[in-house]
Structure formats: structure tokens, C-alpha cells
Length: 222
Image 1 (cartoon, rainbow, N blue to C red):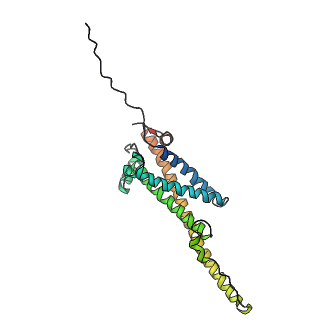
Image 2 (image 1 turned 180 degrees about the horizontal axis):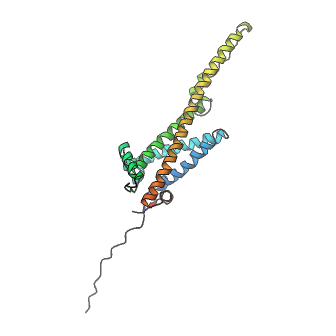
Image 3 (image 1 turned 90 degrees about the vertical axis):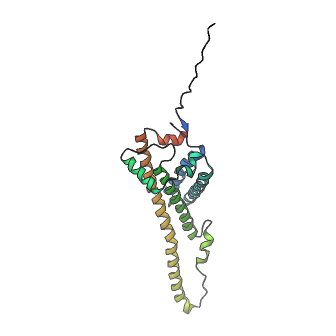
């Protein structure tokens, strides 16, 4: 009687694994759209600009929360790298010797932190600039700066009008301050985005993988 021997079958290694969960992917591309809508509608369509800014702020806050309770590679603990690690990785990347990371690389992690902080500051200063115009949720903070109603006799009205004009000029300069700071952070965020794109392209070439596609499918090779 012939005895049939069965051999253990070793399963083939997976050709890809899921890295980015649906929330991270939806957050990433929604933030891209919302930011650029806000950036290019600042003067022409203020209502669209403001609502796009609200969306940016809400997305960033949700991402911060997800960084503590989300999936493995979405949590901040998975890419808790400091500036030195980010700098070393960046040097290695520029010299084509960078180590591949399944999740965020040290430089990528530092970019995530920088973008989140810059976006939060852009939204916060945008709310202050909008509030200085007596609009939005922060308008009550500037309510005390409204121009007073002056009832004066004709002989003193000219001097009081001069005082009112001076006060109005001072208020205008204070209001414009927040708008200027808001623009600084909005433009600084754009600068970070260009750096981020450059890093993604370089890492994709070095590691021979399509990182933007991975942020769409959520999958990367092991």
C-alpha cells in the first residue's frame, strides 16, 4: 500500500499590505481641496473662503484626534520622531541613501507636525481677522472696538471728529494686523506643501513606489 505524503504548503508572501486607513486618505485629499479653495478665494469670494477655512480647521482637529485613537500608522506614536531624526533622514534622502519606512518617515512625520501646526495657526488668525471685521464666531472679541456714537455741540464737533478719525485709524491698523498674520501662515503653509510634494516625489523615485497612489488605495508593498 502506497502512502501518500503531503507536503506543507508555505503561503506566498502578500504583494501588498494596507497602511493608510480610509479616514487618513479621506482627510488627506479633502484637506488638499479645502486648503486650495480657501487660498484662491480670499478676495474674490469671501463667503467661500471662510467656509473652506472652517472645513480646514475641522479636518485638522479631527486628524489630531485620530492621531491618538486611530489605526497603527495613523497614530502619532507610530511616527514620534524629533527634529534630529528628521534632519538625518532628509540628508540621507538627498544623498539617495534613505531607509524605507512603511508608515511616515522621520522627515515625513516632521512635515505632518509642521503642516498641522501651520494650518491651525492659519485658521486661528483667519478667525481673528474675520472677527476684526465684526463677523464670525470671534466677532464679540472686537465688539468693544466699535466706533462710538458722538452727540456734540457744533463748536466741539470738529475736534471730536478728529479724535474719532484717529481712533478709527488705530482700529484699522489693529484689524489689518490679524489679516497680515493670517496671510503669513497661509503662505507658509503653501511653502510647506511644496516641500512636502518634493519630498514625496524624491522618496517615490528612491524607493521605487508610488506614494501618492498609496494615499489613494491605502496599500503599499511590505
